[in-house]
Image (cartoon, rainbow over all chains, first blue to last red; front, side, top):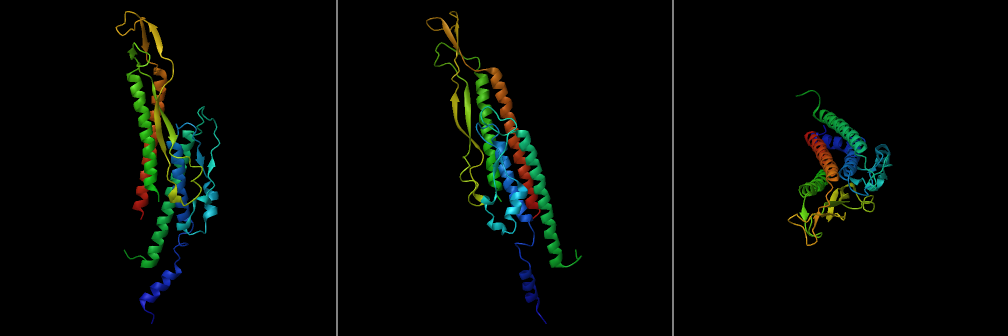
Length: 134
Length: 143
């Protein structure tokens, strides 16, 4: 009869923490980073010569998927300059309305990813504890 | 996670815009300053903003957690070089020997628009900070 400890160890071995949550941890990290980039644009909205930056989330996620989360490097991200619709005379290319909209979109994505991730964790907890016990 | 850095960034924005509002308030308060000497009359003060760091170099290399130096900073406050208004007013108590007085070069309309820009910038930073705080709290709660 196998003892419980061996069974548990076997189960933990099957559960690879780098893949257990799919690409959600990568997505969260990228979205967190994007909120920094967009926030930097917002904060610099009246800095002369400042050029707004952003990156494409989907492309970045494709580039980093499969990598262990703690080894994500910023050079996987192609940070680009926003093409301004009407640059200011002082060279600033931040359009605060555009940046606010992008930032709101990014926050919603972050919340969604966070929700999915915490449900995944709940699922795993159910699997570990077993069934409907309160 | 780099929450503290994001808060630092929003804080730098709030502080910079507050400096902007302070100089605007000082300019408006001294808009009617009069002096008998061109050099001592009040001149409009303007803060100079600069990004915390030109991120073009250090931004792509290294890990996510090394993206320090985001935000904005005030590199200095300069006095406007606009010409001051020279008026011939010999009865003025501050008139100089030739009978001229000098009025400050503060343009109140320009200062009013600067005030709007400053308060909007401050508001955006506060909004950003609040959203980021909510996200951080939700992340902590879900752990």
